[in-house]
Length: 199
Image (cartoon, rainbow, N blue to C red; front, side, top):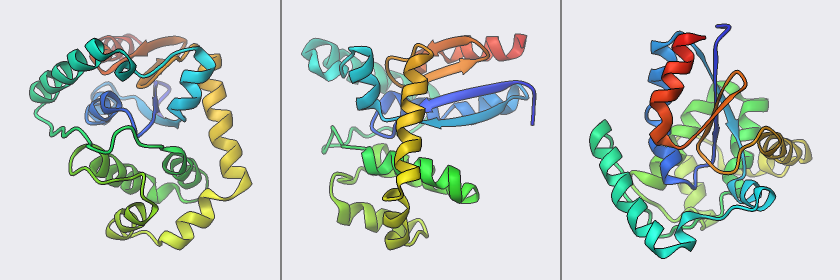
């Protein structure tokens, strides 16, 4: 493992986090850094940090929609706003934790499938049946997945990861850490790259 790490604190329910997801693997590769995935529950981060979703401020929400479209165009990536937003991502984020803990070889395939179903070809991931369909299409056994996310150790892991993120200063997602330095937002990835290059 490279001595340099890029920690990516993420939740599938954030469109700006999706935008960051399209870029961080390449940034890590280009700077010879190890990408460390850190699932969090964004609602838990908001609550602990006294923050709220930008959509709670209508003018900010409208501006963000336009700004995210600009970033997607700049990076040449698809972004389709999910008509079912906001999505309760508790089960999805437990799934990310569970796969990191128990089936790390399957983790990236899961992450790709969920971000795709949330922000590329939007599905109603508030619906357990739709989640099961997305899992099946990605080659996962939905029943085994539900058993995994019901595991008390997996539930505790998501809580611990969320609390650890907040304890380090996170107040939303996407959040990145390069050593002790924290960066927030997909629009700060140039600073992330610079920090990794200097590390």
